[in-house]
Length: 423
Image 1 (cartoon, one colour):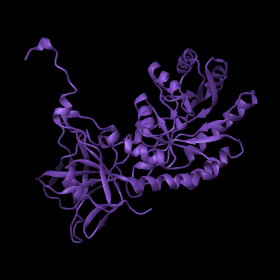
Image 2: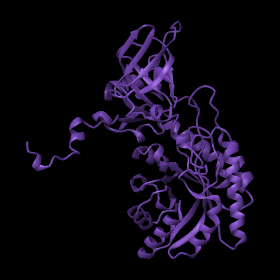
Image 3: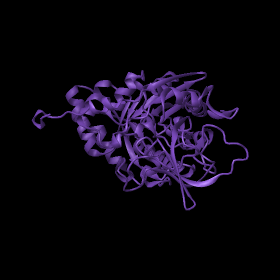
Image 4: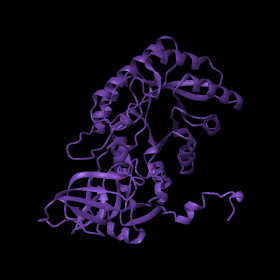
């Protein structure tokens, strides 16, 4: 599909809405999303996987705004959730319970109670302890919980260690060598209906080989379990498809990914589920910010913007790259020069880029942090008592605020001062 954020007559547009117009209405910083991009990414994946008749569960953790969830629900997506809060959001947005998968290593008793009561599609169990607790919850509720055993396949998907989830020693899933015993136990426990296996090795996989390795190991487990007479009718392959963040980044195409899935599971007669997040929303969002000051000294330029690490933590947390571009297109003869882009938070880690080639930038000028639709607003905080940035959704020539900026009074209203402190 076409670029969701592009220059027209020197001004950046989100679909058919001028970015500067939205900035004038809501102030900076703010997140801006393209509904057409989100829908286009979903359809590209759904079309590629269509011959496999999959359940595509949008990974809510990537961007949990209710409007975004409603958009994907309207396209037919289910939801992959990792907390009771995300489960409640998915249900509130209209995702049918029968299309929701609950993953995560630390589900509490209360979360399992709610998941069982909601009768969701399945719970991906990540430890024997969780399996036993879920059995007690389901038994007490007089229900049967549909369970997939999440397997840790010991596959290194590459990328930053902070987002790797399938290596030996990672906290996720049950070790491959223990998976058969765990499945046997699931078949014996009251209140548990084992339905299949799940795997997820990371969310920024740039090559197919790690996925192929994980698929091969999971397919082998399916055959092994069936050879013991155990029913395995579902396989959840998690997410993994990524997007390019900078020039030269690799990205597996949905069609190549679907072909790899068919190679591994085409002959096994299993229901397939997928949990994409970053792939669906990453490229369709930008964080728009204003230049506050430009510091020049001893040949070093520092551009201070009003967005900060509390708004977009990925560069500080993962050393992640986001292209940063002016909202007003630079003149053709503008000469880029190196500079740092930093935020106002009182931390040296509040730095978005160092020695980045940037065009001349003036105070008050708008800049856009690209590919910020995934793990941007969802990971934001109010550190330094900074209000959360608003979120705006564009569809064609329309736009709407889908999360307002809270006031300082709203933030302080969450606190309570005990009477004994006086005042």
